[in-house]
Length: 234
Image 1: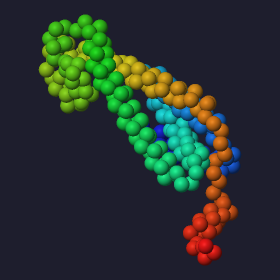
Image 2: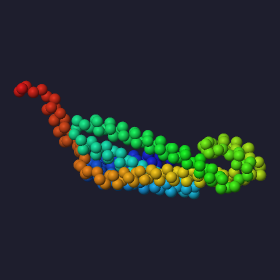
Image 3: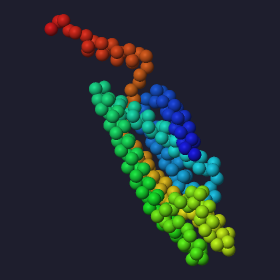
Image 4: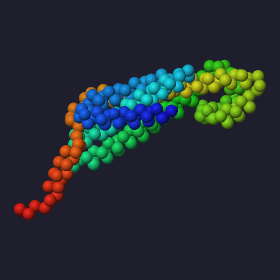
């Protein structure tokens, strides 16, 4: 399922590059990209047990489009706002804080998932009013991932009395519902964070993006050559 996200990101990156050359402005284009990403995350937060796969793909594509617009655009914007001698520092800072943000974001959202999923699984299973021998055979909340392991599922089914095995399908449905409820919370938090970025992008100072056509490249090379040439008049 990660493929739709990557396809959307690659295509939008190419389109964004062409737009940057033509409009040489970034403020509203970046805001639109982040807003599209926000919409995609919100659509993913609405995924339920019965959601068609096409809806999931649509949300992933929108997230990818937003990422493809924002990532190259703001790198260029930062570089355009600084003198040439600071471009290396700016590029390294962008990459550094992008890595920090990704690490912290994955850690926080992963903690939310690992904390809420076992709780919601136990809540869903408890609502089924299962017989004690059935409930005792199920994996506990601390090892909720075992419920998604096909070998663990088969072992659990084998340990159940024959008269309660038909209930097993209800348990699997409950687990899927718990997972959907947990991912809903995760994506809602992510949507809120990206929505803040949309608001912040509205306050960015507008600045023309640096163009690098053949003429501009040659001018830069000529200027650098003049700076490096030895001066015999002094």
